[in-house]
Amino acid sequence: MVAPFASRPSPKIVFGPGTLRELPACVRDAGGTAVFLVSDRGLARTGHLDRAQRLLAAAGLPVTVFADAKENPTESDIAACRDAARTATFDCFVALGGGSSLDTARACNFVLTNGGVMHDYHGYGKATRPLLPLIAIPTTAGTGSETQSYALVSRDGSHEKMACGDPKARAHTAILDPELTATLPRSVAILSGLDALSHALESAVSTKRNELSSLYSESAFRHLATAIERVVAGAATDDDRGHMLLGAAFAGLAIENSMLGAAHASANPLTARHGVVHGHAVSRMLPSVMRFNSTVPAAATTYARFETVLREASTTTLPLIDWVTAMVAQSSLPPLDSGPMDFALLADDATRQWTGKFNPRALQAPDFVSLYERAFSPHVTP
Image (tube, rainbow, N blue to C red; front, top):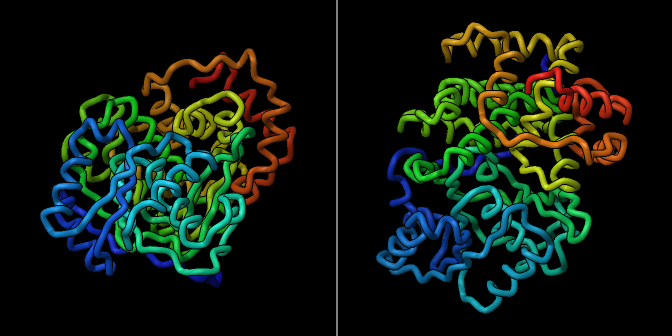
């Protein structure tokens, strides 16, 4: 019997090389007449931010720019964006950048339109008043934030990640322009690609998966498997960048309609306590979690299906988990020193992560300790 489910809608998706030029039309389609554009200083140096401003200005759409989005935005970062937004007159948000820029814009939308502070929105569906429309334009192929209704914001002090979601926070339109990812440094392209890969693989076996999310997970994995080997090798083509961007967006839709698992639950404490970049942390944990999950028949069946997809999409002959392990090992990620890490403390943190509750195989603190030990064992690659 097919299990019942209720889907969450997708934003309008505008995909293709050069589709940034559709930005003014997308703003008007969302009912916007003036824009608050959220981005970051690094992206400003690529010229993409300036081009977006010119497109909006040429269409007669006034634009105010906030280019101070920070990586892993905190409550204080969102408050700073809100304060800037309060001085502007606008009726539409545009977020241009990586997941942090998209999170900053979405989070600012919560507190600007509904008041309070970010912690008030920890969870789902806590905004009581309408939010302004959002146009999401990712410049990395990783988080899938452009197709989700959540903002990830870290608590000041503890750096605990809060997932703040609401159906009204979904982007009106996601513009997926592969040309915008061509300027990514190789290291960022790799980390964001590994993050997207983890989203596809974790959402596929999540206990909240359903018929729709499974379609998105598998399609995301097919696109990512087609291209990620060349991304890791630093030889990505224009077509590869398109596959990666679609893969990340579809993986975002898979998460939106299901959930993640223990790789993210164990990765978040590494970021919070040791400053490990999210894509690095989750990819380090993913192979160990997949081996742990493979004892569950339903997960093993899904992994076997994805292995067939992998054969169709790439030239590898490796089993799926070995291929994921090889992708991480070949990514030239900086070594992580486990010496200062207290695995018991990390495991305790991991048990409180929301995503771990949806892992196909239930975990207690000792299970997380074992996952960390395996992931950081000198005898295991990576």
